[in-house]
Amino acid sequence: MAFNAANLTQLAHGNGFKLWVYSSADAIATVNSAGYFNDSANMLTVRDVIIVLDTNTPTTSLVSVLSNTGSVVDVSDGLAITETDSD
Image 1: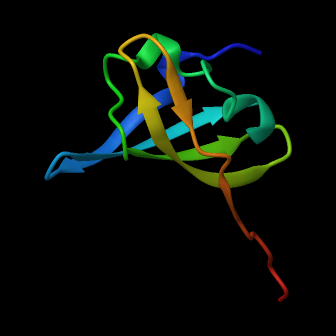
Image 2 (image 1 turned 90 degrees about the horizontal axis):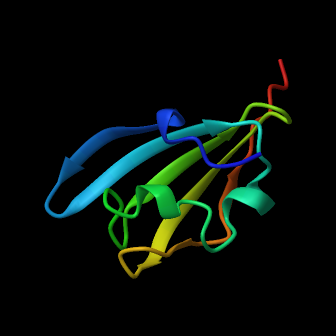
Image 3 (image 1 turned 90 degrees about the vertical axis):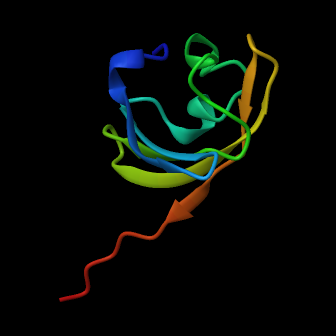
């Protein structure tokens, strides 16, 4: 699937930093590819953090914006959040 800007929501901001959530059926391997977030280059800044929710698997990962040229956005590979329930 392709990036859908309607699924990217800013949760917080302050001190030059923004926290986002992005929900998609795309796997983290797709979302963390350079250029995936290009349509939001005007909103994302380096060091912003995005909580990525994969609605297909489901999994949750944290990525940070590594670079933004104004047209090309690259994010980190992602840190998986372990989601277990042992009760």
